[in-house]
Length: 77
Image (cartoon, rainbow, N blue to C red; front, side):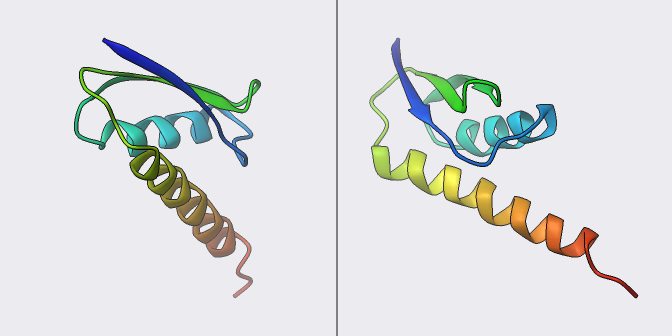
């Protein structure tokens, strides 16, 4: 079992932690993710080496989706 911790900007609540967890768990080989808004990081466990590029892409997907959701919530009809 391999473990790594990555820093993540933009998490502010439990909802964000859940979305980060979902995005990172989609990476092949990842078995567990513990995301912490308080610590601004996520600890990732995997059964094989995962590339930094795949983790960065998952984090970027989280950030883009959160921005899009916030934009939708801020639309005034």
